[in-house]
Image (cartoon, rainbow, N blue to C red):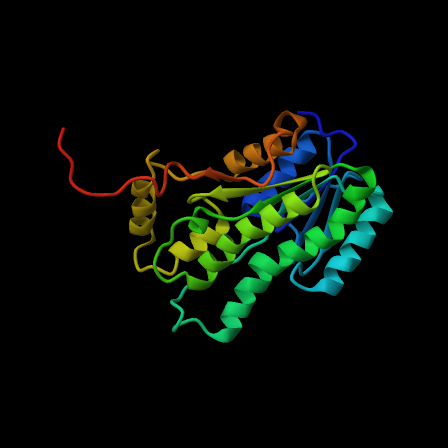
Length: 252
C-alpha cells in the first residue's frame, strides 16, 4: 500500500494503537500529523512528520490544529480518530465530571476532528475517516458505563458520516478487543495482581492471546487503501474472537 502524497491525521498518536498507526502510515510514505497532549518518546525529525499539541476535545484546539495542517500540507486525506480514555465505574459510581470527561475525549473529539477534516476531503472529493471504537460497542464488562456508552455511540456517528458524505468520503469504525497498550497496562496496575488480570484477558479471547497495536494499525492501513473502497459505514471487529462464545463446561 502506497500512501505517498497522502496526509494522514492521527489523534492520540503518541502511544499505543495511535502511535502504531502513525508509524505505519509514515513508513508507507504518508505525511503524518499526530494530535496529542504530549509527544511520543520516539519523535521523527522529518518534514513528513508533524506533531501538534492538541486537546482534541476542545474546539478551539482542533480548529487551530487543522489550520496548521493545511498550512503545512494543504489538505487532509485520512483522519484516524483514535484518542480515547478509560474510566471505571457503574452509573451510580461515575461522577458527572468523569462522565463528561469520557464523553468529551471518546466521542466529542471524533465529532470535532471529523467536522474540521471533512471540508478538505470534500474539496478533493475523496477521503477516509477511521473511528476507533472497541469490542465494548457490542459487549460490556462490569463497571465501564461511560466507556461502553461512548464506544457504542461511535457506531451511530460512523453511519451518519458514511451516509451524509457519500460517495466522496468513506467512514469505517474499527473495534479492537484487548490490545497491549499503555492504557491497558495502566488499568492492570489498578489490580492487586496485574499478572492475574492479564491472564484473565488472554483466556477471554479465542486466540488465547491479546492483540498488538501493530495488528490494529495494519487493519487501519488496509481500510484506508483503495483496495477497501467498497467498505463504508461498517463496524470491523479485530478482537481475537472476544464475545462470540458463551463460557461454560463442555464435553469432548
